[in-house]
Image (tube, rainbow, N blue to C red):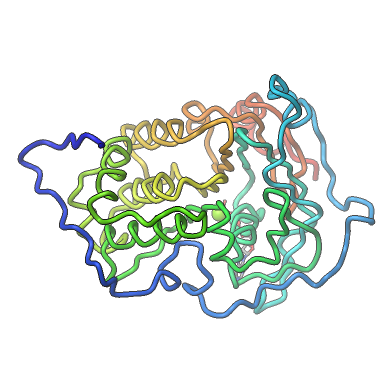
Length: 324
Ligand SMILES: Nc1ncnc2c1ncn2[C@@H]1O[C@H](COP(=O)(O)OP(=O)(O)OP(=O)(O)O)[C@@H](O)[C@H]1O
Ligand SMILES: [Mg+2]
């Protein structure tokens, strides 16, 4: 039984209602139902047989090289030559992204504004604004692109958006309980009762250093930028995703909040869980140490290196790491 460590003056949140006001498919963070019907299609172009379009300069080590102590690293996510366009305007954004993430690895993607980082993340979770025009993505050996966004979430992919959405009318507590139980159901685990869930949630609230009063509020509604980011990490902790994609989790955080969030994220990492962080700043990587740093340019990963690449970027700017 988890210990509840809140000050006695802190009112406990109300327990979730047993009859949720909205269905889980409407509120899941990465759910297609948040955005409407899927227009997300792979055009069936098999680029695996074609030459790799992207220029990839690896100046560090082969991914997974340092995790060989217990046998070969297991690939969690494998992206091959991924191309995507904006569905409405047909504008090409991703131009052959290649990336392999093994279990237990932390990857950071950096790159100039507009280089395609968020688009890449959103395409991975199946955002309907984009259409995949080529390439493949496998997650735990399964074709991710063939899964509806909700299924991707159930499979263990979590994304924290650069601008987290507000969900009026849905309390944070209800949302978290429903999201947690939806994932448990897919894993064949019994649903948690509200009381059991609160026991499960309490240490996570402490880890994120979040006041329980936020559980009673509607999801992200009226939250400050930093509160939204903390809430995203709480969702990640509850969902226990194998791959967390955090898009600028550091933006809008004060120094203390950055440390809290980084500590909570580090606490979630296990040898089987991986992290893909998008950031502009080395300071996040000072707290959450990346196994690899990638540079995205014009819709492709053009360079991969170690933490020192982020340091070089901070010191010398993008010109020093660009291939253009
Ligand atoms: N839904 C959309 N409709 C129109 N254009 C889009 C859409 N999504 C992305 N773009 C365009 O694609 C390009 C890449 O955008 P993206 O958000 O992926 O960049 P980014 O690398 O995340 O930038 P930043 O560092 O500023 O967050 C931009 O020029 C953007 O305007
Ligand atoms: Mg972005």
